[in-house]
Image 1 (spheres, rainbow, N blue to C red):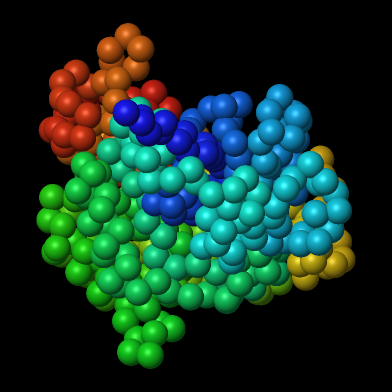
Image 2: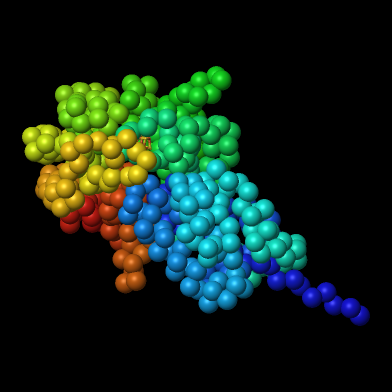
Length: 441
Ligand code: SF4
């Protein structure tokens, strides 16, 4: 009797650099290749193809991505030509043919806009997946099972950006702003919820603009309300809301739905009107103060995060001091600070009066220290409050940790407590804090 020999599926590993938006892109590529029958493995050393999904929105990110690509190129199977190296994401989108000339180690390049074709690229690079038997075997053996260990997921609601801030490469890398349809977002959320995710973090370069580019325009408030009502036991959190996107309709949607985190992440970047104009942005210190007042009128318990850039070309000592004073007002719970990065191909790179690198680094550090001094007492002021916390996992010593609605994943610290199962939402009384971390029982 003839026995069928199962065909082993070709194995693909992903290495992801950069932000949560890139992680979502990797998850989409991973789902596509799994569907096509490839096994997705965690260890790049065992893979037949290693896909490095790169980030290059600033120089430092590009350098980190190149390092990751060269590291993958040095893997024994890749170096021996037995496995293919594929470079995907922002770096091929930003540098195109120049990158291909610089990285002969790579067998293929997949810019952001081409990620839907990842299966065709892999088929070209390493051949077909290995047949349905192989795919089935991969699922049974668990080789393709890469379930995330945390009970939250990022969902992208749009891509690209039309704002063309003068320092930013994103519109050139990711293209024009385009909202994803409600049905597609809903389906992705449903898949995550069915897989046990308790929190969905909606992300984009500019979440507040969602729906404005549809033939029948819609709004972020409508999207959030629809999702919150359809998935009432799931937390929703919205990141990267530009100041113009903070409409009263949106604030009311936050206030109205208990499962939408009262959390606003509003990148201001600066507070000086002249610097903002040079950034091709709008606003001023007074306008931002008024914005925060309006938010707190409608959502009194809102948690507020922002990001600021220090050392933009032409930033005077006075303008920098003004931004420090604004931070000292203590309007925000969390402040992310970046030193301006001079990026080729952007308008700001050609502006006169570039600030010296050391001075930029000093200003950024001063602003960070100031933000810590102002924000950590706000975290400490939560002592004594009871809050819901999503259980995320346990440290090696068994100590449980998770996040409250006032803590976004990966940026705001975590809460430690004593009881609960991963994926549960438990009630915790905050008893102590250490910088941005909270502890309770
Ligand atoms: S809004 Fe954000 S992504 Fe868009 S251009 Fe400005 S900084 Fe870049």
